[in-house]
Amino acid sequence: MLDGKYPLVTGLEHDEMGHPTGSPKLHMAMTAKRRKKLQKLAEEIPVPEVYGDQKGDTLLVGWGSTYGPIHDAVKMGREHGEKIGALHLRHLHPLPNGLEKIFAGFKRIVTVEMNDQGIYGFGQLAIILRARYCEPKVESVTKTDGLTYRVKEILQGVFPGKFVSRRGYSPNRPVSGNGEQDVEVARAESITQGVG
Image (cartoon, rainbow, N blue to C red; front, side, top):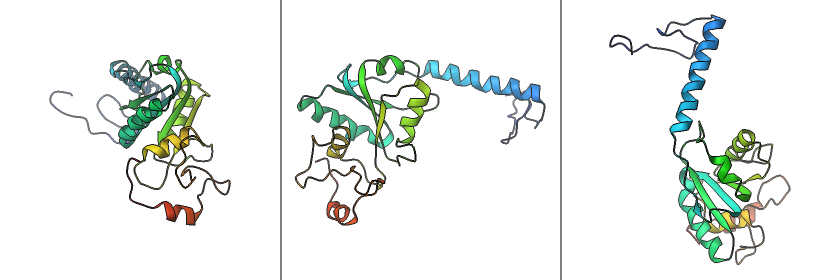
């Protein structure tokens, strides 16, 4: 704030007063300033607590609406003998410092995401974590139907063949090799969504 005034800025690079500029030196200085702000913010963001096993075979990572189903999946998985934990990210940019220490305690890291697996076979959060931490053990379970995850969908996606429904259908299984589900099976599955 400058003498009680707020600079009005656009997406253009600008100086300290908010005036647009094309100066390469100023652009480098302002870019460094923004980077330092993000680094400081990352230091201030608390490291998320791990729910369930603090170390083990599988760590589920999610954000947003996946919180409840992931926690219930951890509870159910542990009841069935899985060494599984979960963490819920509240900040994605910047990511909190300290995640690499948590990741080191697990053999697999699986993001549970409400988006497409894209052309690389991973959800967006998984791609970010793989890139940020150079961590090839990050996998993802994705869903694109717009409905909240059911606990068994998460468990079937994370442990294929282990938590199969009575119909023997796993909602995350690719049918035709391109990730699309068989239309008739999907219609048969479109029942009232719930935890079970």
